[in-house]
Image 1 (tube, rainbow, N blue to C red):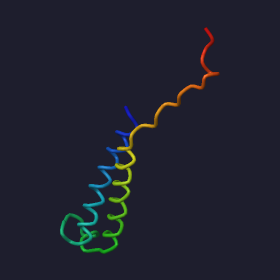
Image 2 (image 1 turned 90 degrees about the vertical axis):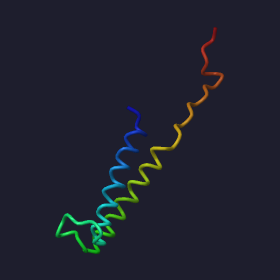
Image 3 (image 1 turned 180 degrees about the vertical axis):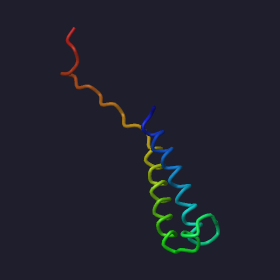
Length: 77
């Protein structure tokens, strides 16, 4: 499995979880009496979501090109 695919997958999960945390902190999504309406979870969720987006961005980067061998490194025929 390609490392970029793992980064993208983890990034998507983190972005979704961070968004849910933020929405619970605002009070738009219910489910947890501790998190509902607690502004701390707005900030925590935002940081998690941004971290997920950063992982997605790193996962979408093109792979590094392979180095071209130097002339002296080539086998002599």
